[in-house]
Length: 261
Image (cartoon, rainbow, N blue to C red; front, side):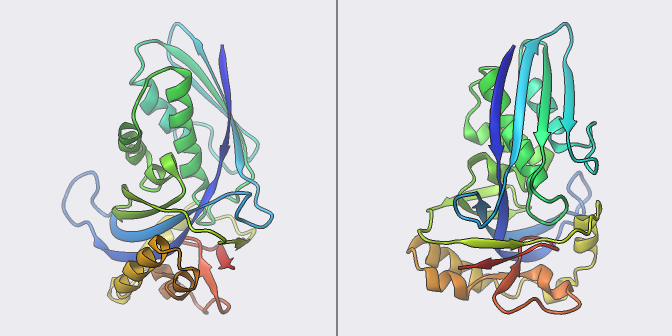
């Protein structure tokens, strides 16, 4: 039996532009086109942040088997779990039958727009790639990640990145020195939160700030912290019944928000 313990971090969207909706028939019909800058949230850059912790074990078996153990009763432990889906994808690449057990210690608040489930899936892909000695490259892992969810490819590398198309096209950006985040979450658990947030969007009010995203990318590349602060924005703010406090921004689709210092 092989075992690996992994830290699973979160993310915030420094910018999020909703550019339209996929209308063509097919598996991606209804997906939204986005342009967004993502920043990984870690204990090193975020006040009082605790990541999820994953323990992944793999052992040879007569047939493939996946077991999810999670301490959060709100999360499914079957095929609906993103880590389970990621394990299915990676096991399909293995030439041996394997029994996989994934134990998730959940610290990232669920359904808050912090990407905890996507992060769990990405860590599962990376962890099993190592445990099973598959040798898949980053680009290959990102392709598998996109089959699980559009935030998952970002977490293969983490850090700072520009994500485009549905969110699966990733361009890495350099780290920025000195950024510190404070997160504000709620106790309101809404399992269909993201679907509802997209449904509530008025697309005629979205996609107006793409120039700010371009300026944000430039500020990141030049390590201009003031320029970064000036260009933060999120189109999901158009769905809020009342605006957030000054200098507070949604982490993603919400309802969590962050303060950057």
